[in-house]
Length: 122
Ligand SMILES: [Zn+2]
Image 1: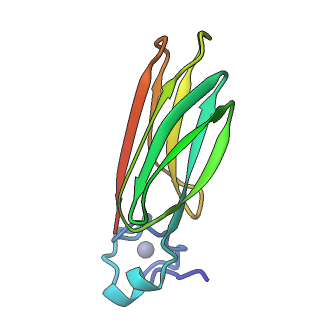
Image 2 (image 1 turned 90 degrees about the vertical axis):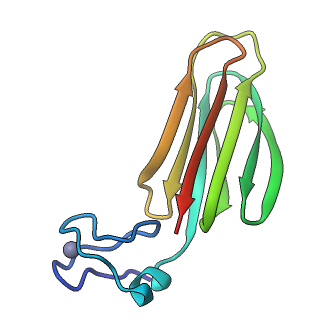
């Protein structure tokens, strides 16, 4: 379900208290009506291991290459991942709203590089 700004008609995005276009402060009902889900994207050209912590608890993640995870989009989200292969290259973690907006992202190019990304959903 989409909600629209009462002032400018822009589609409102979960995770924000204000209209992204005109800055109108959203009512508590408008904020609550927005879907509160999000996702995490991990981009890597090698193998990695890490942890996702959200309102549902912590879980270990590991894989090779690019992966996408659903998260509980309420409260504080923290994700960390570390490159475990010998490969050079970039490890990137993105936290995305359910609309696909990048809320936060971090990258590392270091060997055995560790990345931590956090975002506080409302
Ligand atoms: Zn607006």
